[in-house]
Every structure is written in structure tokens, then in C-alpha cells.
Amino acid sequence: MESARIVGALARYTGDVELAEDVAQEAVAEALVSWAIDGVPAEPTGWLLTTGRRRAIDAFRRRGARDDRYALLARDLDDAAPGPDALFDPDAIDDDVLALMFVSCHPLLAREAQIALTLRLVGGLTTDEIARAFLVPVPTIQARITRAKKTLSAARVPFAVPEPAERAARLGSVLHVVYVIFTEGSSASAGDEWMRADLAAEARRLARGLVALAPEPEVFGLLALLELTAARFPARIDGDGRAILLEDQDRRLWDQAAIRRGHAALGHAVAAGRGLGSYGLQASIAECHATAASVGETDWARIVVLYEALGRLSPSPIVELNRAVAVAMATGPTDALALVDAMTARGDLRGSHLLPTVRGELLARLGRTTEARAEWRRALELCGNAVERAVLIDKLGAFGRE
Figure 1 (cartoon, rainbow, N blue to C red):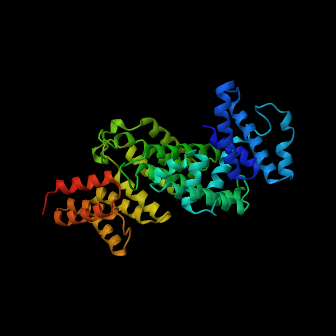
Figure 2 (figure 1 turned 90 degrees about the horizontal axis):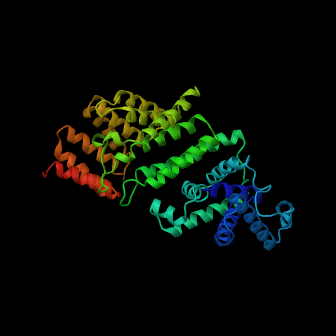
Figure 3 (figure 1 turned 180 degrees about the vertical axis):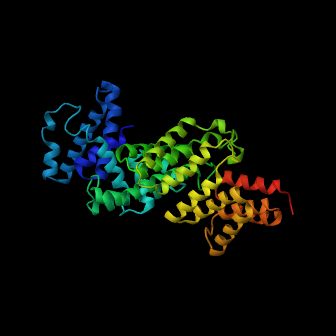
């Protein structure tokens, strides 16, 4: 539970994230032996920090690093009993965690490396867990994390919360990494599960921590989006692990506490009076769904407007496709199909199953069954998630054979 704080505090004093993680792990390993014999100390976090610092000193000694950093770490340590000391500064812990997030998401690193390092250092996930979450080999994740640490070390990236001017430029990267983690958790891109609830929960935990450390409107917007989206999780899968689409979900199962948290977070974003950013707009869309009694009673016209605003602020084919779905619900499939056909002509989302899935649905609603089946077959060829493939197969079965 305290891993991010411990690694952050040790990184602050050693100036080396990789060394900090290593000595933190060594401290935990020592605790497993020592505490089993002597019992858990009154201040376990302080014990781990002190032990981690001792391990760091040993590492510096082995390196022959007799500089100011070594002198700072070693000062009076030999006379100190295990427990809270100058390294454990309660007033600085939150800054340490925030700094760890900004370092993990440094723009020097590729996005894949940012995600892996954030989950490893801040989320505390093992390399095995990260590899399973993103369906890549463990050695690949290990290599990404190792390269990321070496890149940060070689660039002498300081372990600190960036200055306000730089922080604003880098906050977007931090938020995007958390968003990507949640997105993969809420709709797995491949594998046998439609959702990775554990991964989505980790993203929510990171977002909550980020709100406490950097209470900016767009951070509140991201948290609101994650809470309002996760509120629907209990109704999205049946007892056999099969997907339940929005129109068929039992809304009584939706997490009302998460909806209240999301609504409150969105309120903070709106109260700032700066206009909503992309996450705030997406949260507003999620709130429309979360507060509607049924699909038919959803304010689809407002959702269309929100997607139009989102498209101007953060244009992307996914936003355009979602706008088309909302248009279909607001004014009918004909208008929506025109938007989707324009996307197809531009080559948007080539290689993704999403566009043919939606196009097939629109064609089916217009009674063009043969064309709809062709689109769903194309989507089936492109889809890598077993649960979503089952949904497509059901659609093909429901509309009979040609």
C-alpha cells in the first residue's frame, strides 16, 4: 500500500529512481524475515524507509560514490534506531508520489514506457501483472521498464514535481497515461475478458491520488469520467462472462456511490469556470448516461452537442464514430450512416472492428440486412476480444442467413 510513497521518498534522497525501487524491494525482503521474528514495528513505513536508506548507502559504497549525496544519506545513520527519521517527512510524502507520477510520465519516454513505468512504480503492479494486462510478453515489459529507467538516469531527470510552467505542459501526459490504463481496463483490446476491472480500478486509484495532489479542473474531469464510466461495470457482464449491451443493462445494478463521486468531481471541474476540457466533456457525456432511467430517456441531443464540442477540442475518428452513434439515437440511422460512410471514404479507423460494427448496426436498423451481415463479418475478422466477438456472432445469428 505504501510502495509508491516509499519509492518516492527514496528517489528524492538518492536522485535515482531505479536505485530507489531496488532498495525499496530489498527493504521489503528484509522486512519479511525480520518482522516474522521480531514482530511488525510501530512505524512500519519508517522502518522500511530507514532500511531502504541503509541499502542505498551500501550501494553508494560499492560504487565508491563519496560525494555530497552519500554524506547526506549517511549522516548520523549509524546511531539511529530503525524508525521514522529525516527521510520520512510526512509533509513531503504527497509531493513524492506526485513527483513519481511526473517522472514516470516524462516526455522523454515513449507512451508504452510511460504506462509500464507508471504501473510499476506508482501502481505497484508486478511486471507479470502489467504484461497480462496488455497481453504482451513479460520480457517486453521488463525491457520497456529497464530502458525507461536508463533513459531517465542518462538524461539526469531530476526527481521533483515540475515547476508550474513545466507542470502544465506535462500534466496532460500524466492524465493521458491514466486514461489509457482505464480504457484498456474498461474495454480490453484483446483476450478472453471484455473488461479488466482490476486495471480500471488501478487507474481510478491513480486519478483520485492525482486529484488530491494536483486539483486542476481537467484532473477532476478525468476522475469524473472514470467514476461515471466504472459505475456501469456491475451491469456490463452476465454470470457467464458475456457482454450485456447498454440497452439491455439492469440499471439498478449501477454503482450509485460511483455516480455520486463522478457527479461531485464534475461539479469541481465546472466550478472552476474555465470551460471543460476533453475529459470534462467526456465525463458530461457519461453523466448523461448515468442519470438517465433508460436508453430511450437519455438526452441524446445533448450528447450529440457534447460530442461536437469534443470533436472541435480533441478531434479523432473515435469521437466522430461515437457522435454518429449518438446521432443515430437522436435523429435516426440515416443521418448517422452518412457520417459513418464519410469516415469509411476517408479511411478512418482502418484495421479496427469498431467502424464496421457500427455501420452494420445502422444498416440493420434501416432493414439492409445483407449489407449489415457483411459489415459484421468484416468486424469479426478484425476483432481481437473474445467477448466482443461473441456479440458479433450473436448479431449474425439473430439476423439469419442470406
